Amino acid sequence: MNKLIGFSARILYEDKVRKQFVNERYLVPFINKGFNTIMLTLDNPNIESLLEMCDGFVVTGGHDIDPSYFNEENNGESKGCDPALDQLDCAIVTHAAKNKKPLLGICRGHQAINVFMGGSLYQDIGKSHSGTKHQVSAASNRYFDFPHQFETNSWHHQSLKEVAPCFDVFVRSEDNTIEAIIHRELPMIGFQWHPEMMASDPISQEIFSKFALLISKNS
Image 1 (spheres, helix red, strand yellow):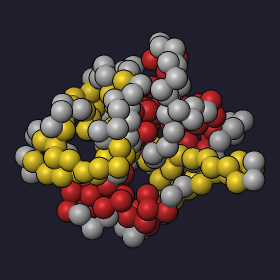
Image 2 (cartoon, helix red, strand yellow):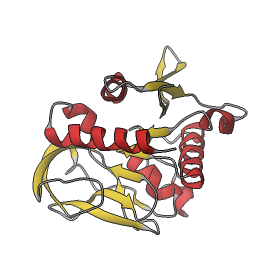
Image 3 (cartoon, helix red, strand yellow):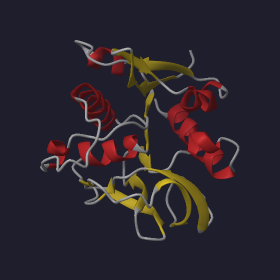
Image 4 (cartoon, helix red, strand yellow):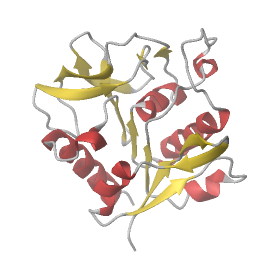
């Protein structure tokens, strides 16, 4: 039976109707590798039963997380906060940690892993990382063999502040923004940039290939 990856739903509004979706660019790298994929929708009365079906998870990009989760008030810079999104991401992160299932976080997903594992965020770092590209530096780690320096895209206005316990930072940007974290024991990884937007890039291909391998090996 093919392994199943659960992807966090995101929302948009059309004619005041809330719609749930997953950007196909997150799915394609795994479908092409033979994995089944499923969208984990919002507001399920028993989300745990759905999470139990999945062999691994991808928490995708999206709007900001409510700062109350890291003991701060919203100073007006955290935009688009939605309780249903936060509850879903929290459930996914908590389930993955408890059951030692592989978890990949991208952009908001990277921040969600950090927040729901006990870290915090800068609510606004300005426009320097929004809609641009920049150089990053990578350190050695147990999963990826990245070059020491390479270029990433950048589409965020928040970033990690206090890193969650048991996580190490292994990629930083030139201004010291935390671009990637990895758990010291669990198969949990977060990237601040969007590898799905650069699917043909060797770094992106390595991210998806190594994460797919983690899921394949997970019993």
